[in-house]
Length: 535
Ligand code: G3H
Image 1 (cartoon, rainbow, N blue to C red):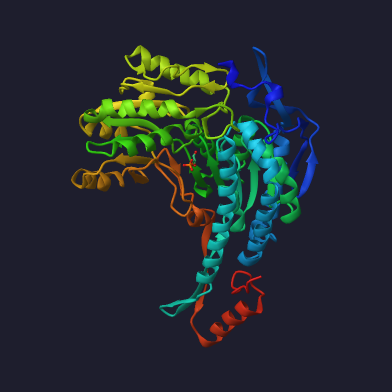
Image 2: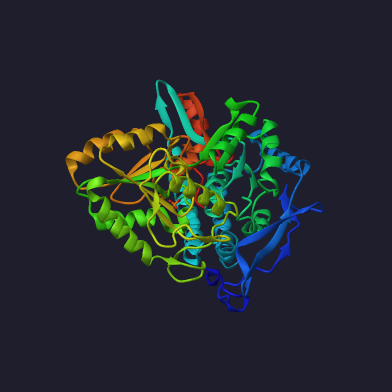
């Protein structure tokens, strides 16, 4: 299996490994500070191969800030917010939009630096890394367009019961932004961008894996935003995050990652009623293949849903319930399709299965497999579940039962558990027992069977996918979950709402005050009331 990793001299010139650098700079209060304390090493999941030897590939080192430095960054974010009086929260939507447009342009220019870092640090295929970058630019475009729409809506005064009012949205305060390793760029901006757009100030800590790509952005934040509006810190989450929350000076926790960590962070806040959590957490999305389903489609979507990007997606299909009447045909077709998917290095064309980003993941997947095998499941594809270092071959595992860990735990990797079922009660029980409730995929064509399932499942998960895999996009649709899968909604419009608070200026609807409102609005003295001519 070692040949899957290329030798040093055979690396492709079009996707070079980044030069190893010691990063000492971090961004606080509009200044690039130089850290003279300890650094953390950043390794690639793509090791160096010499003949039969693999050794870890160092990509760089980043600051391991101490708590004092992190608290300084929080103080800078608070000072920039200045109880809502800072230049950014009072700038008004139109002017903020212009700054964010420039931020988008600056990000677009850094594609050549950022995409290879996604490949080398996360092991993401080049095509998916390009896709993540593009999607982030699109997210900017959609957010900026929505801001414009919202500005138009807010500019219309409302008059009712003798009161005239102008509505708008106001920032919530200081946002702690924490994204995950699997979409380190996109999901950082999925919260950072709406937070900024609505006038908040931000303390951002990049994920431990997927950290290097933030360095090319530090200068951009510094150049375009008032001091302290974005502060970027580095270090051990376990040392820094709970104490930051414990100050009570974080207003919004924007976190995409595990529910256990989210719960610890929320609990650390001394005034939880003042905290707005915006959380995208774990999931164990199921596919249900019903009698009469279009098998070819079901197999294609289940394969993509469970194994694209190694299954390292919160929305991945993590358990497949297949009706007994289709079991053999489904497994045969799935096996054939599985045999055709490409496994290799991220730059290989059409590759799905690449080295796993998290060093501990292969061991965890092995433990899930061993548990399932010990309880009567089998690996159906030859070589499935074999691993070398970060490389883990996908495994189709059946029959999986509720007694197995794989039935309940979120594998976040290339294991495909199949549960044959005779009665929907099996799935009902799974949904009832699961801590998660993000999405489900139903495969079927029989309306009489589908309708009651749809009508009950929309009340149990956040999205029911018909004859297609689960996924987050498109970003104009609400992305959320129930139970421990999410708090709040991440999508263009909903995120702008999540990072802002409704605000009003109201008055008695008399001639004099109406004139005052008009004058405040047209003079440009108030950014909240201004109709804000397009810049
Ligand atoms: O990991 C969770 C991501 O938000 C999933 O996004 O469905 O576009 O892969 P995706």
